[in-house]
Amino acid sequence: MAAAAAIKNALFKLLRGAGTSLALPDDSRIFKQAGNLRAHPRNYCTKTTIGFRQQMDHTIPPKEYKWTPGNLINESFKLGPNGHVCIVLNRQIQVPAHVVKLLWKNATLRCAVDGGSNHLRNFIVAQSAAKQNKGSKSDIEPGDIEPPDLITGDFDSITEETIEFFKSIPKINTPDQDATDFTKAFTVLQPVMLQRKVKDVVVFHDCSGRLDQVMANLNTLYKMQKDNCNVYLLSGDSITWLLRPGKHTIQVPLDLVTSQRWCSLMPVGSTAHNVTTQGLKWNLYHAQMEFGGMVSTSNTYSTEFVQVETDSNLIWSMGAYGFEEKLRSTMK
Image (cartoon, rainbow, N blue to C red; front, side):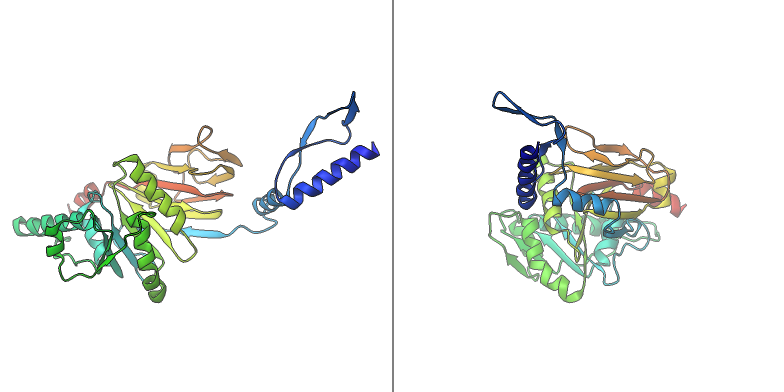
């Protein structure tokens, strides 16, 4: 038994030094028989899992994050004390027009990415026509829309008509084919964002498009979501962003709670081993989330403050109230 204990201790030290986890034999059940080692396994913790458990048990306090998505879907339409950046991707703009206009107007920096400039031009032309044809006045006028501050991309999608339309706008060529135009746009924008102390980015995209393009946008979320950069993807009726390991408090607009709008938590890319939530209709308690196992879709709210504590990255997505219906109801 002394030899068995020595073998176990040596293996355990080796594994701890490598930072890996493995089921090792229990010294009380280990024995040699006919030259073969038989064992009844017991799971041991390594440095990595010990550190994780300490954090989730609050021996090490988790990093805390606070989110106020209401700033994207109510009258303020502005993020952060220093404003936000707006980016238009190469997809049709599906976000309701008045939301686009106000977020775009309040932006500190505006960027169109390659073919996104075609969609922005179409949007501006359509809003200009709507303004000319509008017979009645309202609190929200289409108005003139500011041009982008710059256009980036490898310019394989922008049309000659759009180039002429935005002829006075600076255009920065990013030819690297190993990254998407969306990712490359961040490389261009980040120095300016740091200088202006802007950390919030609003991206107009279309989640009903090709799956590979949607996944590419989510991949950019993983690459760019940092302490000094929060990225929000806005589609027709939803807002999506990344929750990093830690404790997150999301203040949900009361309209979404009372109307029981949907929300979801998705573990994209890797398993989340320990997820606990509060404030949802169907909460999780130290749950493991992974594709092929548990995911949380079509959930909703029990209160306006939702807490999510996770040991791994999660994609949070939430349905926003019907913008146009809400607008019409407030105008009556």
